[in-house]
Image (cartoon, rainbow, N blue to C red; front, top):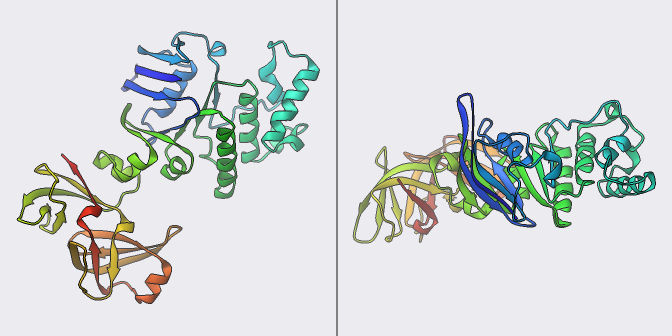
Length: 350
């Protein structure tokens, strides 16, 4: 469908470094990374605004690396909308149809149809200065989608919007995707990536450092950088030693964590998801291989539940329900026990 093959481009001290990935027809593909990772530069290269130094861009079997922007069958929506302020909403959306052979009746029909689909039919006579950020983003989407692009490129489309508008536009983007649109979406927000994408590529310093499904990337991060970036909070450097019944991961301050026997390697990182840890007020006969006593440092309410931060020699973040926090009468400074199974631990060899 869309193949990015060894794309490299240098500007100043920054460069894209042999970036490669494939976007299949119907994918919602997320390019995820921190600001300055090269995501937007890569998107502009795919769109044709930047010519790469080397590599190729293949769309539906055709090499479009050096094709003109208007011939690429690719639509790009910028973060800042790029709406013409002197035109009405109708005129902005219809602008993309200039020179495409549509008469006025056909243009009006196409604009009305896509405006209805995006929920902005009532705004067609308005000027951009009278619109909210969410409305402007929908107009930008409509202006691009009316061209019927094979691939829709989105550059941080939700970055400047408040949480309510973000939620509405995420729903709109899911709807567009369900209608069959292939999308490549740049973001630095891992929650946005999880809620929208079916494939994710993590970018760092101009390179793709991990690619896969959301499950693969978020549950099995391939490096310390990715783990921290995607919000994995229980992530520790360890050295490995063996015992008769377990493989032992020894942290830098000599806390022992029991791993499954089959783990190999001499050092690396362990990752423990916060929802895989159980907390209790007292020690009890647990089937979990790892049982550690600690002191509560902090209790943090959140959307997913209540995070309890416990110092056991290593600082662990434990996710529980608000009801459990209340029932256990948890408070800062209280002594508690945490429990987690060896099979709940992800070991990433160095």
